[in-house]
Each structure stands twice: as C-alpha cells, then as structure tokens.
Amino acid sequence: MEGNLASDLADRADAHGWRDRPLFYAGDATISHGEAHAAAARAAGVLRAAGVRRGDRVLLALPDSVPLVAALFGTLRLGAVAVLTGPEQGEKEHAYVLADAEPRVVVCGPELAVRFPSARVLTGEDLADEPASVPPPVPVGPGAPAYVQYTSGTTGKPKGVVHRHGDAEAYFLAMGVGALAMDPSDVVFSLAKACYPYGLGATVLFPMFCGAAAVLWAAQPSVEGAAEQARRHRPTLLFTVPTWYARLVAAPEREAGVRHAFGSLRAAASAGEPLLPTLADRIEQVLGCPVLDGLGSTEVGHTFVSNTVGRRRRGALGVPLDPYEISVRNEAGPGRTARPGEPGVLYVRGPSVMTEYLGKPGQTAEVLTADGWLRTGDLVHVDDDGFVHHHGRVLDQVTVSGRRVSPLEVERILGQHPGLVEVAVVPDATEAGVLHAYAVAMTGADEMALLAEVLDLARTRLPEHKVPATVNFLAELPRTSTGKIRRSALRPTVG
Image (cartoon, rainbow, N blue to C red; front, side, top):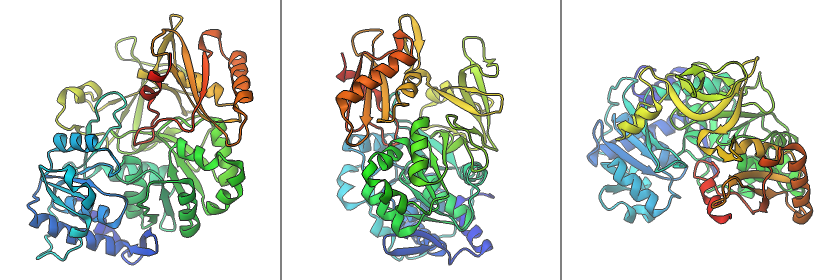
C-alpha cells in the first residue's frame, strides 16, 4: 500500500475491475465495491463540512451497515482517525470512550446521540447526504494513524489501540491469504461485529483487499438469525468465537438445519478464546468443513498465529503467519528464550503491531519493547513442527496447594466430556487453593448425571489439587464484547 488506506483500496478495486462486483449482502440489498467507495467519498464531504480535518478523531458507534463502512473510509479519506466502539455498549462504556478519545465528531444512530453531549453528532443517514463537494483523499503515509479500537478490558479499563493505514494489508496477507487463501469468489460471514478487530478484518477489509464479498448483518447475532443469513447468502468462510460455535452446534435437534444452512462453507475460522478439541470435532461434524483455530489480538489488529487450509493440527493454535515472527520467553530469567516444548510468554513482532495505547505511554511501554516486540500475555509452547500450543493467559494462572495452575489445563480435561458445550474454571473468591468450574451443558442433558460424570472425569484425569470443588451449570458463560470469558464475573459468585 502506498498511503491512504481508503484511496488505496478504491484504486485497487479500479485496477482489478472489481467496482461492479458485490461487496456486501445486506438483507435484500447488494452493494458493489464501487458503490461502497462512492459512499465513503460522499461521507468524507459531509464530515469535512462538519469540521473534520487531518488528525482529528471521529468516533463511530454504528451497527454493521453501509453507513459504518462509509463513515470509516470517509474518515480515513480525510486523514482523520476513526475510533470504533460497539453501538450495543452501555452508557458508561460510551462515556469512557468519549472522554478517552476526545473526538471532533461522533457518528451514531439517533437513539445514541444523547450519550455524546460534548461532541458534534452526525447520524449514518447524514453521511448519505450529497455534500457540497467531495474532497480528494488526503495523502498520508502508511505509518500515519488510521483507526483506534479498544481492548476488551479484562485486565482493567479498556485501552485505545492505535493502528496505521498500512496495518490492514499486513494482517490481510497473514490471515486472508496465508491462512485462508481468499479470492474474489469468497463470501465472508462474521458473527464478530466490524467495530471489533476480528469483525473489521473479516467483514470489511479482507473482502476489499481481494474483491470478495461479505454478509453485512446489523442485528446482534442469534443462532436462528445466523442460520437464516447463511441460507440466504451462502457464505464460504465463517468467522466467529468459540462461544458462538458452541451455540451453533449445541442442540442436536437443530443439527440438520444448521448443517444445511452452512453447507456452502469451505472453512471456519475461530479466535478470541481457546477452542477445545472436543468442540472443534463437533463443529466439523455439524458444519462439514475444517475449523481453523488461531490467536490474534487488538494490539496486532487480527490473527497472527493460525491453523491454515493447508496445514492444521487439532489442539494447536496453528503456526505463525507471515509476515509475523514470534518469540517464546521464559520470564523467570532475564529474557531467556524458551526451549522447544517449554512453555513461556508469547511475544510477537510484525508490521501491524500497534503504535501505542492512546494517551497511555506508561502502559504502552509495559507491553511494547523498543525493538518492536509486543508482549501478549499468553502462555504457549512451540512443538517440534512449529505449531503453537496455548496454556492460557499469564494473569489467569492461580496458586493451588503452593503450585501454579493454568485454568485452561483443567478446562481442557473437563471439556472432553461430550455433554459439555463450554467450561470455565476460576479460583474461589475467598478460599485460597479451591477451584470451581462453570459449564454450559448440551441442550437436554441431565445435569445431575452430568455433574457426577464430569467430576469423575476430573478425578480420573487430574491430580487432586486441580480437581474443581464444584461444577456449576449456567445457560451461558459471561463474555466481553470481543468474546473473551469474563472470569471476574464468575469469581464473586463462588465461595
């Protein structure tokens, strides 16, 4: 890419003859690549008339829709910086982002306007107005700031991650090309929304880079709604998190309908949380396509380690994707590189690693080294074939009987029971050294019998200090907006 991402993608569509190809399927409407870029140009004119200039920040709180895409690329055309937040977020979350990002303009639905009293507010409909003039794209370098997305806040307040105009091409080449071998014939369906990193890449950026199409679905996901969208638009690639895969395949009585709805898939990508092998087996059984587990982060922009359509291993996160490099470090010593097979903390370096946490130089320095290595906080090991295996998050480790335990290790054993859809293990809120498991059972399961079987499995397969004191069944596990388990929401309920 030469510079401004918005104009570069428009030029790319022209050069490859994609302007008349479908880009988005939104309900009954089909929006072409050319129409989307034209909408972005008009939006740039409206934003400029509202006072937006190069370097200003524009807060976007819109559902997956043409107005969101127009607002995003209209902002980038002006050399301004888009700040993305979920429209479904609560009032406190929006107030936090407003204060942290200090946007010049907010673009949101009319029902949210009251939440942003300190900024000029435009609606998505405003951006569709014909502006007095359409400004030419502002020339910026690929290293100029382009957009900000917020972390999920599992370890404190959310932090605004700053990405550049050139970052998207790097993670498209990694995931879109390297892992999925995307081409113009693909139709992408992401249950992760475009205001979040996984969805932004899958729904918006990847199809624009390769002339493909995507399902643009404004509604919050449901199993029935997702199946209807899939039946209607026949996606070839599915992106979502383990929790949504679990919901899709949890009910045996819906299996035939889900398989028919998603029968056009050639691959399904998973990230956000570890994918238990038993769930992966169930997904492939129901969907009839390979499921590719991977690891990404807001700080990198998208997936940087993944199984691929040509190389995959059950139970592993996959392999590092070009152009990223990883380092596994034993932090007990002064930056010692972990030996093959030895768990350590994962570091990643590559062209899309963030520039900073917005306005937080101290926290940036805690995770980003001077030579560009990002400390992810994940515990992993790399096997002899180069596959990366996950051991959980450093901050999720707990001390039991004087020994460090990764909840993921226990979750993987419990998750081997076919009656469980997903499981999370947390320490007791008050009693040190005691673990509790929270699980979602398959639809129709006898929970009393399942409880006995799961505890028996734990006692058979785990040392005594790792066996949970209780197994508690929930309708669903609490999640952050990006699909991560909110373990802190479970801890206060135990003890």
